[in-house]
Image (cartoon, rainbow, N blue to C red; front, side):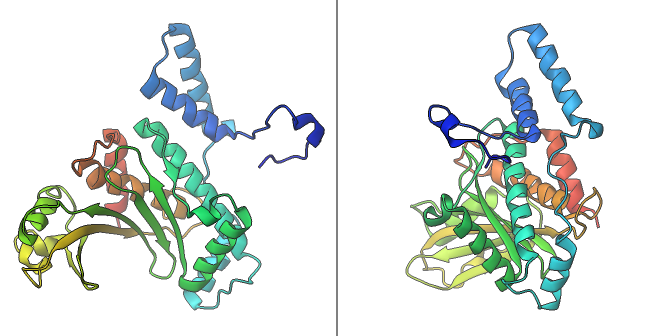
Length: 299
């Protein structure tokens, strides 16, 4: 949506788009890192533009503030007093949508593929309905949620900020192989999680059964049978989930909400998603992955 009103008669033959400086920055970074620029002078100019836009004083920094409503809404969630009719709740859900957009831009420039949020069809193009759904969810269970589609990844990545528990939860669902016993299918996923943290939750869904089995990865590394209460059950899919501390401050770098979400997504992608097969997920830059993992592991 454009921030100013424009006479509709001027838009009969042309489209008007509002592009933030953050989008310009991420597009420039993607061009330099993944597409390349043949002309050396143009490459230098683009690199200088990126350097300028990344400077804190440029005024073009990415989304880094959840707004004045963040703290009172967070406290209302913790106290159990938040209601969908509260005036400030809409400000927080709007900020969350901006954060999701920024998160997609970051991943796009880092990975070189177009990362987009996945929305239910009935609200994808209906902004008021989308806003109302987010408000209802935040007031109901105290969570902010999005789902990201990353080209090449084996599945979509779910991101849930739970204001009640103070955690950000990242998830991905993986279909089990169509052949082999239950034990063989479980071992298939465990072999791909050798470098994953012990705190990863591994949940198994079975065909023709509503019940699932769920254990911490540290408890099934040497005892895969813990995920198979019935050895004869047919394993249908796996759900992998990882929780990280959720920042509480509205802005800043330490213990702030936005950096904690960014770090949790980057760490989950680096430690779990990009290593899952048979996907061809692009690799996250090593320095970004290391910083993200360190951020979510620090107290």
